[in-house]
Length: 203
Image (cartoon, rainbow, N blue to C red):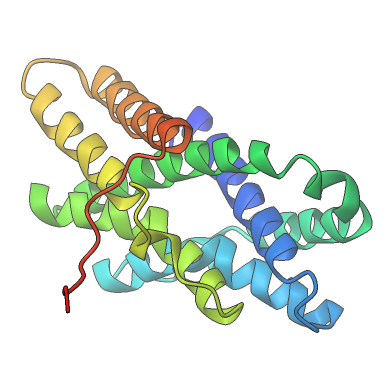
């Protein structure tokens, strides 16, 4: 994994650990529970991806830095929870970076495992969203991926951008395009509350 992608991956893991720690606030969860929630949230997407692809041991078993990072970030979040909570809006944009990063990494890992383009896009989406699903389910919230605001769709767009651009451009440029499409489209969705129509039945 290129160094820049690796460090972005660590950043994305940190963001999810922070978001999970804050989500645990006021839920009656003890400190061990907060750490456990942060960990399964931060590594959930990548773990799911590696298990589906048969890429074992999974990434955090091979590299324990992920474990130590989650524990450190969780501890700091608990200590500075009030200060961080007041800047919660920033976390949405940090989460967008995490989504874009995990989407890109999911696609790259799937490609190294010789998965098809369609399967690679799905792995990108799963890598970017499963952790958040785990967080929301365990804290009794509706998962963000199921809400009206665009989330998983932005990862799909990024994946399509990767495979379309890779036909004419280098892998590095295609990776940058994938990241940019996912991140920018997610930010646009956040700022203008863009989403798909909800399903309802009129009485």
